[in-house]
Length: 279
Ligand code: C2E
Ligand code: CA
Ligand code: CA
Ligand code: CA
Image (cartoon, rainbow, N blue to C red; front, side, top):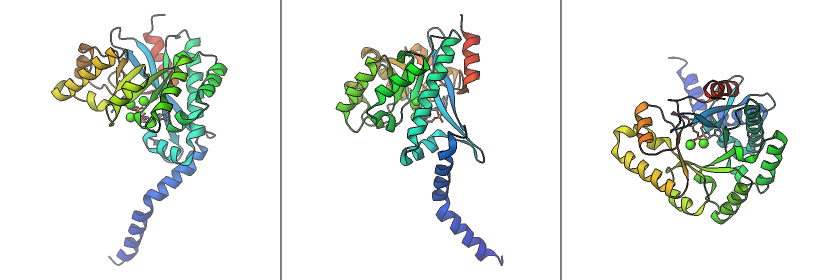
């Protein structure tokens, strides 16, 4: 009880500085993440719901920090965006994804498409199309095997500019997916104006869909609308057989989720595809 004052001081000290310290420490560590080879790309399979085959994968960034262990991309990507570190990180992601795509093709798995999540920084870069060409060329793959996943928040700034950029990217053969569909305010407006190829239904609609008639109504409508617009529909975050069954019965094209597989290190993903593929 005598040391309460001291403890209390430390407690307040901690309370006041904890977030700031954490963010700053993370930023400092993040600066070295690439050179220390602490970043990895994991791959989560995308499965065709008609054939049950793996047709692609989403590349998901992982950071294994020496002292702190695994740090979620949801936590460090915003810091990377704020500090400009997103530039070297995004470049590394795109290069690594293309390198891995080439390795898959060399194993006879040339049907696999790899999706990369685009950061705001990357999307706003004027030279993105040239950079994409450069990276795919040096990796030895065609851009048509790469998909970009974009969230609505990236598009807000200037829709006209976004339309032009997406058209240019598509002319190179790349496919464009709208990610987390339905979680923001202007999804329908974007859908009307922007030339997407793929719509990803957010996991919040998928979760327990078989027990929720409102989610069912919304999801059915999204799938029908997307198909009428000529888009392919992927459901993300599929965890149960009940969710899968509803999506199959209602014409969803592809799925991704823990039910089939968690995101895997590249080697494990490659092995999984090889073991399932009829070569
Ligand atoms: P996202 O693009 O919406 O990715 C889907 C997230 O759902 C991933 O989280 C994935 O691991 C997780 N997930 C997949 N299947 C299931 C499931 O069945 N159940 C549940 N509960 N979750 C599932 P993750 O890997 O933690 O990534 C979080 C977010 O970080 C991503 O959301 C994406 O916005 C961002 N991110 C990840 N990698 C990159 C990257 O390379 N670049 C950029 N710019 N952002 C990235
Ligand atoms: Ca995504
Ligand atoms: Ca998503
Ligand atoms: Ca998300």
